[in-house]
Length: 99
Image (cartoon, rainbow, N blue to C red; front, side, top):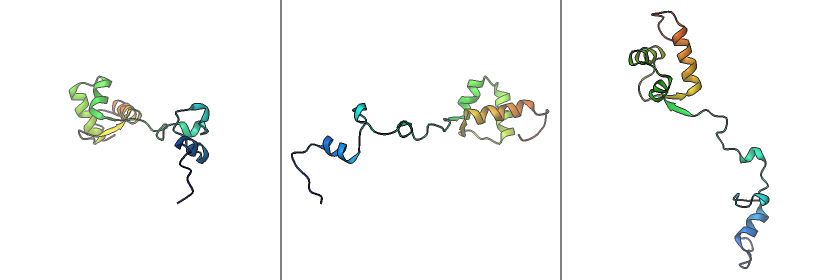
């Protein structure tokens, strides 16, 4: 076990080791990139039912869209993927099969 001085407080040890909890922004030496959340560039995953409601799809249109996309209830996708699939669905010919 390393030599520890019982009179030294934990924040001093943390400062010496380069570990910071972010409580003191002036003492925080991490770069801006390190401060970003781990999933900053990843789109939020949302239930397709909620996205369909948000898009204002009628029940029949939602059922046809989910069938064409081969999506079942409970599936979750990003808003971007949902909108791209919806655009493909609306642009296809009637009875055009899968999207």
